[in-house]
View 1 (cartoon, rainbow, N blue to C red):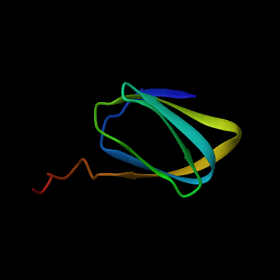
View 2 (view 1 turned 135 degrees about the vertical axis):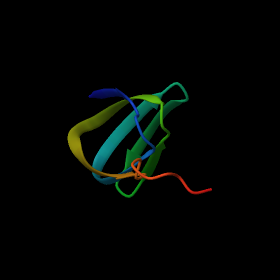
View 3 (view 1 turned 180 degrees about the vertical axis):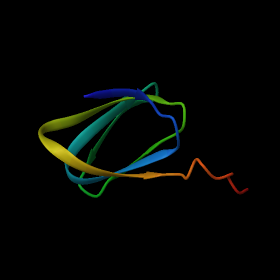
Length: 68
């Protein structure tokens, strides 16, 4: 289990297994091939299923100025 305030815009891709992401907006359960967007500043709790999960993250390059 991971409880965290998202510091940058994150996108999580589930490669194997299942995860659940809980925030003030509710809970999303994601499995293989699913994509979960987590906006900057959102407080989340991420839990892997009993068998575990393998995920990849895509993060906006926060060291660059955003383009409109």
